[in-house]
Image (tube, rainbow, N blue to C red; front, side, top):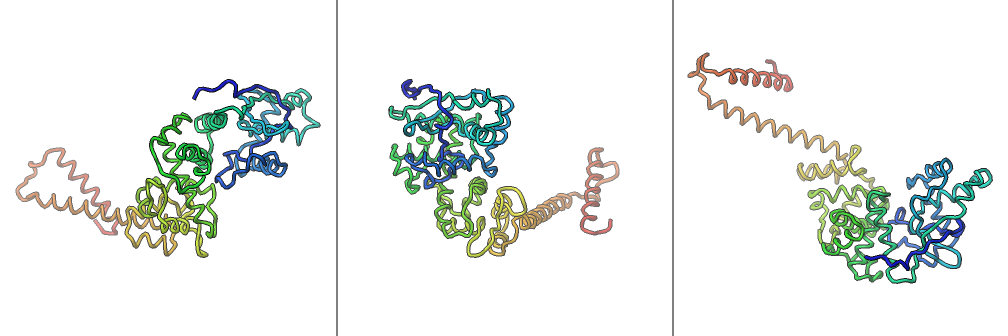
Amino acid sequence: MAINPDLLKEKVLDIESLLLDPNNPRFSRHHNDITPFEKVADPAVQKVAYEQMLSRANHFEIEDLVAAIKADGFIHVDKIFVQKVKDNKYLIIEGNRRITAIKKILEDDAETIEPELKKQISKIPCIVIDTSEPGAEELIRKILGLRHHGSILPWKPLPAAFNLYREYMLAHCSGDATLAKDPENFQYVPATAKRVAAMFSVNLSDVRQKVKLYRVYLQLMDTSKNAKNVVSPDSFSMIEETLSKQALKNFFGYDETSSTLSEEGAEKILDLYFGLNEKEPVITEASAGMSNVRDFAFVVSEGTAEDTRRIVEDREKAGDVRTTVAAKILKHTLQHALEIVLNELNKINVGEMGTDGFAPNEKENIVNIDKKMKLLKRAMGLKD
């Protein structure tokens, strides 16, 4: 897309006129959470956005940015992009972390900071995107995508998936925002995914993976209304790990085209991962800890139906069940190997062989086999 120069205007704005984006993809996770544009300037909305940006739980590292600005000043390496809201108010499109840090400094240290720094951060050079011009909305989405789906300031998995899914659905629904909000209209079409990948300069595989992940996430959010524990952003990696294992996709009834689980599969995953019917969740991490998705996938793939029931019904830790399944596999493998060795040795007519009938390498192999057999005997508690 060629950028219309009339869309972009440079302007120096007072820090008080800059509004934090309450729909910042960093903490947006569902289209139902979107704040209508006409309400973004509301003081209560701005207060929530400010608190979310400062929250240590969100890991935006605002405190580090505050310290850097105090030490080195506000260096205008990247432009702040904004759009006009009303009167003298502008909504930040790109630069929410930096403006939050500045607002924090002025809130906490306005009377103590150096006059030069205070002057520097009181008025901010910005690029104003004229949203009255055609193509402005697409440009806004492109700016965010190029910066945060690449290597500059990558979003975490959930906001990245949220943003790609939203763009994919707009393209899939021919720009109809109402249709795009309905997950039932989702269908994976490679040609549409290619358009989104080209728009944000990311790999097609990344778009395919993330839009499908987010569709499952929406399904679980909708199904979990009566769940004991609502699906959280922190659990997104568990869904990602689940869809990377074919055994679990089969177990939960995953459909590739619609990117949804069967109704029974959705209930199963909510039960196991988040807890239903007064049960505690039994799968608690993606790949760490004693009861994780990766171990569960191993049991479903390599174990028996009874092994899987130990986790699903008896609520045993997946790591413990995996250990027993792996032990059974090892025992089976050893038994199979010993049978092969015995069959091959039985083919040898030892009586026809004299001491001169062995080549040097054959003698070495016999010695090594004997050593291994002694180790196996000890492991079984047998005497040599």
